[in-house]
Length: 71
Image (cartoon, rainbow, N blue to C red):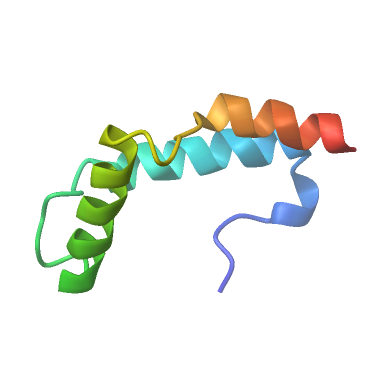
């Protein structure tokens, strides 16, 4: 079942759709019924690494720019 016809969307429209989906999904990020328990454990580990300077997060905009520069 396809809600969006992805083949008709250009790359920019696909990123916009992805951002809108993520914004909507993330509103319920703290609802325990929506994610397996192990997700929280992984997120806490990643947050700890970030706070200790062992990892870096990138914004969607940064990832998009990097991706487009690879083409």
